[in-house]
Length: 201
Image (cartoon, rainbow, N blue to C red):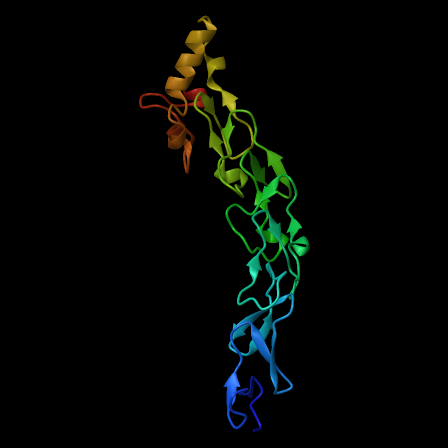
């Protein structure tokens, strides 16, 4: 019989046509051949190229493999994970697999993102992937006057006391629980109740 594009003549009954199984494609109307490297069986009798962010290094597969975390690929029809390019050491895709471009490579924890990845300043918490300068906040015992990358130890406000007491006062009065210093809109929100002003002094 004259079979449709994605079908072949049945081996047992040459008057009927049948669809190739997933992972195979009709070849010349007489045989099913396995999908090649870089492709997958997107439907019975149909092979499609792997999309960006994925690859296929085996034949006759029904889905493509995702590029691992911290890598990306813009290639279509990639045949190996070697085509997944690594993010730079200071960047990560987090838990994202199958990234399509380097825009998915964000600054790691311990950095904040500007035009480049900048190490977290002393006295700051940089705990989210892709954090901007506005996303980082003061550690317990530190104070920030604006959204500048400057975090000042509050203990310098306490002179005439021991280093141990100055540190204790600072940690009790400035960002005593680091989470209170996230998403602040006024600098005094960094201070414990009853304290305000520079260094919560």
